[in-house]
Amino acid sequence: MQILLISDLRGELERLALLLARRGRFAWDAVCFCGNIVAGTARAGEWEAAARENRPPNRNSREIIEEAYQDLRTYKQFCNALNQLELPVLLVPGEYDAPEERYFLFLQQAAFGSDTLIVVQENIVKVGPYLFSGFGGRLTEAQHEDYFLLRYDRRETVFGLRRFHYLNPPRILLFHTPPALPDDEPDQARLASPLLTDLINQAAPSLLFCSSPTRRPKATAFGGTVVVQPGSLAEGHFAVVQTKTREASFHTL
Image (cartoon, rainbow, N blue to C red; front, side):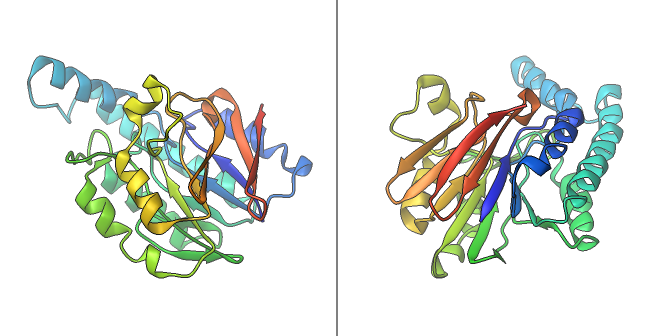
Protein backbone atom coordinates (compact mmCIF):
# COMPACT_ATOMS: atom_id res chain seq x y z
CA MET A 1 0.00 0.00 0.00
CA GLN A 2 1.02 3.59 -0.59
CA ILE A 3 -0.26 5.91 2.14
CA LEU A 4 -0.52 9.69 2.11
CA LEU A 5 0.47 10.72 5.63
CA ILE A 6 -0.49 14.22 6.83
CA SER A 7 -0.84 16.09 10.11
CA ASP A 8 -1.29 19.53 11.65
CA LEU A 9 -3.47 21.34 9.14
CA ARG A 10 -4.37 23.96 11.79
CA GLY A 11 -7.22 25.40 9.69
CA GLU A 12 -5.10 26.09 6.59
CA LEU A 13 -7.57 24.57 4.15
CA GLU A 14 -5.89 26.04 1.10
CA ARG A 15 -2.89 23.80 1.84
CA LEU A 16 -5.16 20.76 1.77
CA ALA A 17 -6.62 21.90 -1.57
CA LEU A 18 -3.12 22.31 -3.04
CA LEU A 19 -2.14 18.86 -1.83
CA LEU A 20 -5.20 17.13 -3.22
CA ALA A 21 -4.67 18.85 -6.55
CA ARG A 22 -1.42 16.86 -6.80
CA ARG A 23 -3.16 13.53 -6.52
CA GLY A 24 -2.41 12.70 -10.15
CA ARG A 25 1.32 12.59 -9.37
CA PHE A 26 0.90 9.81 -6.82
CA ALA A 27 -0.89 6.47 -6.50
CA TRP A 28 -2.25 6.71 -2.97
CA ASP A 29 -4.24 3.77 -1.62
CA ALA A 30 -5.22 5.42 1.67
CA VAL A 31 -4.77 8.58 3.74
CA CYS A 32 -3.73 8.80 7.40
CA PHE A 33 -4.21 12.06 9.31
CA CYS A 34 -2.56 12.51 12.70
CA GLY A 35 -4.63 15.38 14.06
CA ASN A 36 -5.07 19.14 14.38
CA ILE A 37 -7.67 19.87 11.73
CA VAL A 38 -8.49 23.20 13.39
CA ALA A 39 -6.24 25.92 14.79
CA GLY A 40 -7.76 26.12 18.29
CA THR A 41 -6.03 29.45 18.91
CA ALA A 42 -8.62 31.03 21.21
CA ARG A 43 -9.10 27.93 23.36
CA ALA A 44 -5.39 27.24 23.71
CA GLY A 45 -4.70 30.91 24.48
CA GLU A 46 -7.32 30.98 27.23
CA TRP A 47 -6.00 27.73 28.72
CA GLU A 48 -2.46 29.11 28.87
CA ALA A 49 -3.57 32.50 30.22
CA ALA A 50 -5.61 30.86 32.98
CA ALA A 51 -2.63 28.75 34.01
CA ARG A 52 -0.37 31.82 34.16
CA GLU A 53 -2.94 33.79 36.15
CA ASN A 54 -3.87 30.89 38.46
CA ARG A 55 -7.59 31.03 37.65
CA PRO A 56 -10.18 28.77 36.05
CA PRO A 57 -10.29 29.11 32.24
CA ASN A 58 -13.33 30.88 30.80
CA ARG A 59 -15.36 28.88 28.27
CA ASN A 60 -17.66 31.76 27.36
CA SER A 61 -15.41 34.43 25.92
CA ARG A 62 -16.47 35.98 22.62
CA GLU A 63 -13.35 34.66 20.90
CA ILE A 64 -14.02 31.07 21.98
CA ILE A 65 -17.66 31.21 20.89
CA GLU A 66 -16.71 32.62 17.48
CA GLU A 67 -14.00 30.00 17.14
CA ALA A 68 -16.56 27.23 17.70
CA TYR A 69 -18.47 28.26 14.57
CA GLN A 70 -15.25 28.47 12.58
CA ASP A 71 -14.22 25.01 13.79
CA LEU A 72 -17.46 23.49 12.54
CA ARG A 73 -17.00 25.09 9.12
CA THR A 74 -13.43 23.81 8.99
CA TYR A 75 -14.43 20.27 9.95
CA LYS A 76 -17.09 20.25 7.24
CA GLN A 77 -14.74 21.54 4.53
CA PHE A 78 -12.01 19.11 5.60
CA CYS A 79 -14.34 16.10 5.43
CA ASN A 80 -15.85 17.17 2.12
CA ALA A 81 -12.41 17.59 0.55
CA LEU A 82 -11.11 14.18 1.65
CA ASN A 83 -14.35 12.41 0.74
CA GLN A 84 -13.72 13.41 -2.87
CA LEU A 85 -10.63 11.19 -2.95
CA GLU A 86 -12.83 8.08 -2.61
CA LEU A 87 -10.03 6.44 -0.60
CA PRO A 88 -9.97 5.19 3.00
CA VAL A 89 -9.13 8.17 5.26
CA LEU A 90 -8.06 7.20 8.78
CA LEU A 91 -8.16 9.90 11.46
CA VAL A 92 -7.23 10.66 15.05
CA PRO A 93 -7.75 14.04 16.74
CA GLY A 94 -4.93 16.41 17.57
CA GLU A 95 -4.36 18.37 20.75
CA TYR A 96 -6.18 21.39 19.27
CA ASP A 97 -9.16 19.39 17.94
CA ALA A 98 -11.16 20.22 21.05
CA PRO A 99 -13.62 20.12 22.67
CA GLU A 100 -13.75 16.34 22.47
CA GLU A 101 -17.54 16.41 22.24
CA ARG A 102 -17.48 18.72 19.20
CA TYR A 103 -14.83 16.72 17.38
CA PHE A 104 -16.44 13.33 17.86
CA LEU A 105 -20.01 14.51 17.30
CA PHE A 106 -19.02 15.99 13.95
CA LEU A 107 -16.31 13.61 12.75
CA GLN A 108 -18.02 10.41 13.84
CA GLN A 109 -21.29 11.54 12.29
CA ALA A 110 -19.40 12.42 9.10
CA ALA A 111 -17.81 8.96 9.14
CA PHE A 112 -21.21 7.28 9.52
CA GLY A 113 -22.39 9.09 6.39
CA SER A 114 -19.23 8.36 4.42
CA ASP A 115 -17.81 5.31 2.69
CA THR A 116 -14.26 6.56 3.24
CA LEU A 117 -13.81 8.47 6.54
CA ILE A 118 -12.75 6.29 9.50
CA VAL A 119 -12.11 7.58 13.02
CA VAL A 120 -9.62 5.08 14.48
CA GLN A 121 -9.50 6.52 17.99
CA GLU A 122 -9.90 3.49 20.33
CA ASN A 123 -11.04 1.52 17.29
CA ILE A 124 -9.54 -1.25 15.16
CA VAL A 125 -10.10 -1.34 11.40
CA LYS A 126 -8.69 -3.36 8.54
CA VAL A 127 -7.57 -1.65 5.34
CA GLY A 128 -5.90 -3.91 2.83
CA PRO A 129 -3.77 -6.40 4.75
CA TYR A 130 -3.15 -3.98 7.65
CA LEU A 131 -4.89 -3.51 10.99
CA PHE A 132 -5.06 0.12 12.11
CA SER A 133 -5.76 1.62 15.49
CA GLY A 134 -4.85 4.85 17.22
CA PHE A 135 -5.21 7.38 20.00
CA GLY A 136 -5.09 11.11 19.37
CA GLY A 137 -4.63 14.20 21.49
CA ARG A 138 -1.56 14.91 23.55
CA LEU A 139 -0.72 11.92 25.75
CA THR A 140 0.45 12.61 29.28
CA GLU A 141 1.18 10.64 32.40
CA ALA A 142 -1.59 12.05 34.58
CA GLN A 143 -3.37 15.03 32.98
CA HIS A 144 -6.82 14.93 31.42
CA GLU A 145 -8.41 17.88 29.59
CA ASP A 146 -11.09 17.61 26.92
CA TYR A 147 -12.54 21.10 26.39
CA PHE A 148 -9.80 23.66 25.76
CA LEU A 149 -7.31 21.07 24.53
CA LEU A 150 -7.31 17.29 24.15
CA ARG A 151 -4.99 15.69 26.68
CA TYR A 152 -5.27 12.09 27.88
CA ASP A 153 -3.53 10.28 30.71
CA ARG A 154 -1.72 6.96 30.75
CA ARG A 155 -4.61 4.98 32.23
CA GLU A 156 -7.16 5.91 29.57
CA THR A 157 -4.66 5.55 26.73
CA VAL A 158 -3.60 2.05 27.77
CA PHE A 159 -7.24 1.06 28.27
CA GLY A 160 -8.25 2.46 24.88
CA LEU A 161 -5.58 0.43 23.07
CA ARG A 162 -5.75 -2.69 25.22
CA ARG A 163 -7.10 -4.97 22.44
CA PHE A 164 -4.67 -4.00 19.71
CA HIS A 165 -1.72 -6.17 20.70
CA TYR A 166 -3.91 -9.31 20.77
CA LEU A 167 -4.30 -9.20 16.98
CA ASN A 168 -1.97 -10.65 14.39
CA PRO A 169 0.35 -8.35 12.38
CA PRO A 170 0.85 -6.45 10.18
CA ARG A 171 -0.36 -3.55 12.32
CA ILE A 172 -0.13 0.25 12.04
CA LEU A 173 -0.77 2.74 14.85
CA LEU A 174 -1.79 6.40 14.50
CA PHE A 175 -1.03 8.92 17.22
CA HIS A 176 -0.87 12.66 17.46
CA THR A 177 1.79 12.63 20.18
CA PRO A 178 5.20 11.31 19.14
CA PRO A 179 7.04 8.70 21.21
CA ALA A 180 10.23 9.49 23.08
CA LEU A 181 13.06 8.30 20.84
CA PRO A 182 16.79 7.95 21.50
CA ASP A 183 17.77 10.58 18.89
CA ASP A 184 15.35 13.25 20.15
CA GLU A 185 16.67 16.78 20.51
CA PRO A 186 15.63 18.74 23.63
CA ASP A 187 12.69 20.52 21.94
CA GLN A 188 11.40 17.19 20.63
CA ALA A 189 11.84 15.33 23.92
CA ARG A 190 9.79 17.96 25.76
CA LEU A 191 6.65 17.15 23.75
CA ALA A 192 7.25 13.41 23.30
CA SER A 193 5.65 10.70 25.41
CA PRO A 194 7.50 7.87 27.17
CA LEU A 195 4.07 6.19 27.33
CA LEU A 196 4.18 5.71 23.55
CA THR A 197 7.63 4.22 23.78
CA ASP A 198 6.18 1.64 26.18
CA LEU A 199 3.28 0.95 23.80
CA ILE A 200 5.66 0.39 20.89
CA ASN A 201 7.56 -2.16 22.94
CA GLN A 202 4.32 -3.94 23.91
CA ALA A 203 2.39 -3.85 20.62
CA ALA A 204 5.33 -3.93 18.16
CA PRO A 205 3.48 -2.31 15.23
CA SER A 206 5.09 -2.42 11.82
CA LEU A 207 4.61 1.33 11.43
CA LEU A 208 3.68 4.16 13.76
CA PHE A 209 2.47 7.48 12.35
CA CYS A 210 2.43 10.63 14.47
CA SER A 211 2.77 14.41 14.34
CA SER A 212 6.05 16.31 14.40
CA PRO A 213 6.33 18.54 17.48
CA THR A 214 9.15 20.52 15.90
CA ARG A 215 7.49 20.32 12.45
CA ARG A 216 10.51 18.56 11.00
CA PRO A 217 9.63 15.50 8.88
CA LYS A 218 11.53 12.33 9.64
CA ALA A 219 11.40 8.54 9.80
CA THR A 220 13.06 6.70 12.68
CA ALA A 221 13.61 2.98 13.24
CA PHE A 222 12.80 2.02 16.82
CA GLY A 223 13.14 -1.67 17.55
CA GLY A 224 11.00 -3.43 14.98
CA THR A 225 8.86 -0.34 14.34
CA VAL A 226 9.39 2.52 11.90
CA VAL A 227 8.07 5.82 13.28
CA VAL A 228 7.09 8.32 10.56
CA GLN A 229 6.44 12.02 11.23
CA PRO A 230 5.24 13.90 8.14
CA GLY A 231 5.74 17.47 9.34
CA SER A 232 3.08 20.19 9.39
CA LEU A 233 0.67 20.38 6.46
CA ALA A 234 0.01 24.01 7.50
CA GLU A 235 3.60 24.62 6.40
CA GLY A 236 3.20 22.50 3.27
CA HIS A 237 4.79 19.24 4.46
CA PHE A 238 3.48 15.74 3.79
CA ALA A 239 4.84 12.20 3.47
CA VAL A 240 4.15 9.21 1.28
CA VAL A 241 4.75 5.84 2.94
CA GLN A 242 5.25 2.51 1.22
CA THR A 243 3.94 0.02 3.76
CA LYS A 244 5.64 -3.05 2.29
CA THR A 245 9.14 -1.60 2.44
CA ARG A 246 8.32 0.80 5.33
CA GLU A 247 10.07 3.59 3.44
CA ALA A 248 8.84 7.19 3.55
CA SER A 249 9.40 9.99 1.09
CA PHE A 250 8.92 13.57 2.27
CA HIS A 251 7.51 16.38 0.17
CA THR A 252 6.73 20.10 0.42
CA LEU A 253 4.03 22.00 -1.45
